[in-house]
Image (cartoon, rainbow, N blue to C red; front, side, top):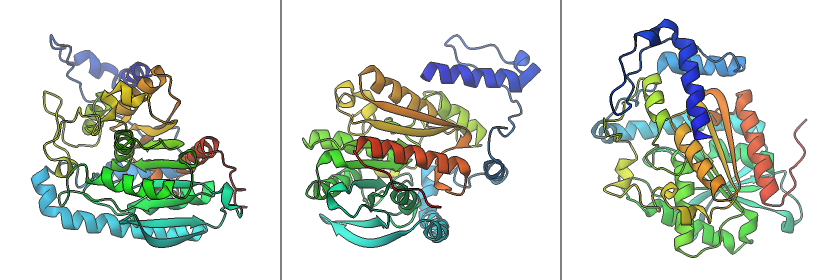
Length: 368
């Protein structure tokens, strides 16, 4: 799977680059390729709404893409405020579309937002629970902001209660604070229903944390949930692989160093950890991956995590675990957080069917 994706990217480069590739610098003895520039148009396969979204992103860019961690720390208050304000405006629109009720609660000492869909089954024995972990590089975002961008559509489309977790982040807290918080919420969930009726998912840092939480559950000898979703993330906390370089160039972001390392915002949470520790990056432990529940991966061809996700999917399949990988053409990291896109609605339908199948649930009728 990983090799086929890399070959596809190379073919795209050959087609788009034309004669530019003929002028490429010869490769280094270690196989490193100096990639020439070439025009990369927006994918013709995207919906008009998605084309407009991608075009806007290319033109305006990400203001944090070239910030080192010193600058991130200095601007963190503004980054946090900006992300939350954007999310709150999106949530106001989501609540017009999706019939849910929001409840601020505390589960086992951890603040959460319980998203209760009006489509939940009347029979308590038929109800299911999903635990959502928001993104934000482990330094910004909240359960009631970025978390609800996923939790609201997923709750409404599955008929399942979704609990968005307000886990501790850096730089105020360090690893494994977030994993500990998720485990507390999971223990509270296990008091309500069996593990096979509970799912765990998240996007970006939340997707990474989903993998780390499963590793933490294994360490704590907790039963694995019935299903997990690693969205816009894989099992390597540093997002290694080809796509890390390709997307950095495409997004005019910081390129990795010659040794492949790259300071990332998440370092403000991780501190001085061993990134090959399975509790940080479960992708490096076959015994741990062999314990994973059925896992769904959502990513896209312009997402930095693509290689990481493809590699982890291949590892799980090779170990005999059930793993579903869905890659959306032409879109970028965390694209589904914009629920207005037709492609995002496709992704949410994939998520709903996946969790319904593995948690033994019946999906509610779609709205008229």
